[in-house]
Length: 91
Image 1: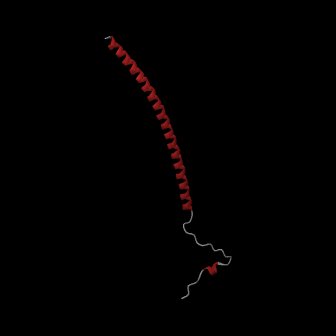
Image 2 (image 1 turned 45 degrees about the vertical axis):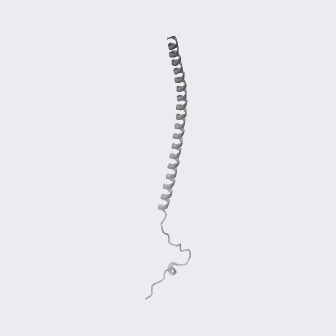
Image 3 (image 1 turned 135 degrees about the horizontal axis):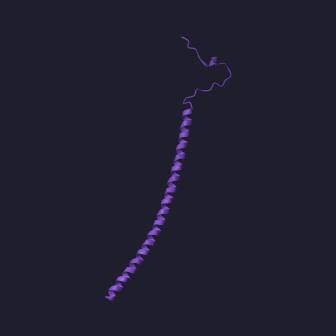
């Protein structure tokens, strides 16, 4: 039985060592995943801000377009009277 007891103690120590290694590995993985999540969130926020700025620029462009007249008459640039700009209908 001495061998059995020794084997039990050895297994227990091996299990504790494995658990310690596993805990360290999991802690390291949690640290890496937490950093990756933070970076992902930072990128998401940056993309959202960029999209908001783009949407605002598009809104401003649309507002500028709606303020402009859609059709414009040619400018009357001569200094003469407007009488020569129209032709009377003669039957």
